[in-house]
Length: 317
Image 1: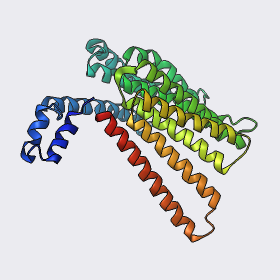
Image 2 (image 1 turned 90 degrees about the horizontal axis):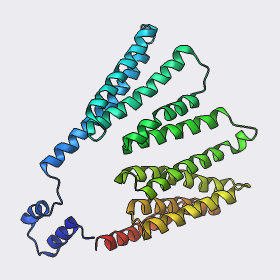
Image 3 (image 1 turned 90 degrees about the vertical axis):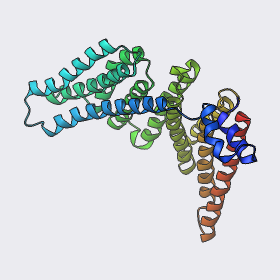
Image 4 (image 1 turned 120 degrees about the horizontal axis):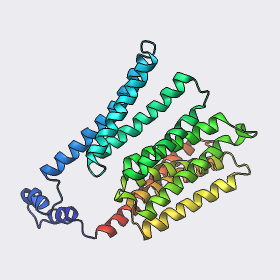
């Protein structure tokens, strides 16, 4: 696949295109966004930023005026905007950006309503139950909305519910193995979400799977680092999970989907784990060890950058 902007910039670098004509060539090749594209982008940016700030404003207003507001006033401040948002959603539909923004606002206000119910009536529920109930309550909206940001919000709620669950219930071996069990659970949840997104080509959006992959990379890298510094019975499992993830990332995003960002995540994880392993071996007994580690990280980073640049050149060549 030819990248018009890269081709034009290459022509300018080779002297085949005058510098004063580069911008005109980029515009003619459709490599630069038009004024209409910028207006659409700014409209969406301001729309969704306003939605998030509006939901945050409702929550913070209630929190700040909690003692001065009666029960009915509190519920009215959440339920009336929620009903108005649902009415606007029915009017706008789910195909327009404004409709998707209304659905996102409704999902955020639903969480505020659940928190208000729990705080007002003191149900005795744990915090993780709030996020779990929130995720369950908005799941039909998420499915019907087919909106990447709403799916990411839902997945974030699931992650919070799982994390808070492990904090509330450590179990018999919670002190020793709780953090690893939590990371395994989060890795499994986000990993399955990433696989499902890539298989179904969810909503034709790349930023969402890349964000999920970033979380997966952070978790599996942390598991590998734990295995290096705390070699117990779970170290072999952690190492196996990390090797499997690195191999799968290379195979999928190098051979099939060709995503440079995903390969960059894998390369960064290899650098972190490799440097950690070498650092554990040398144990920094001499001052020269720090110089060696610095050179090692620089060398690995340079090698990864060179490899990624070659892949990028292959894709756009």
